[in-house]
Image (cartoon, one colour):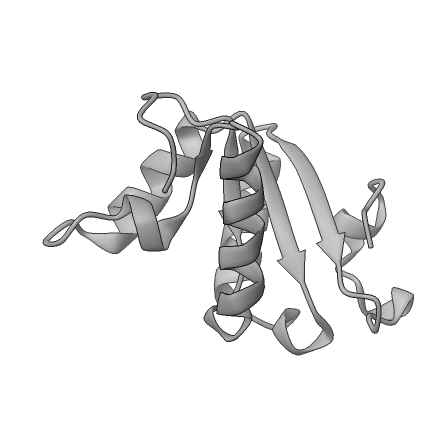
Length: 115
């Protein structure tokens, strides 16, 4: 699970189709002792999802986007990307190997991304 610190260093953005990848990524961050926010572990029962996401975005230092070709059209991706850009967060795109470069959203293409 995410760490107990109030200020999370990393917000993990993904689509729920990438649930397995996102959980593995969150586990890897936890094993390295990094502070992060992961919706499945940090949104409490009864908490309003949109408010939890907004607060986590505001409090995070950076946003990691886990992207596959199938997830690039997600409305949540564009909301979280727009919020991260507006809040001047450090944005770290992580792109699956089968992702065609021309399909990467322009704001993410302008950044150094990981494959």
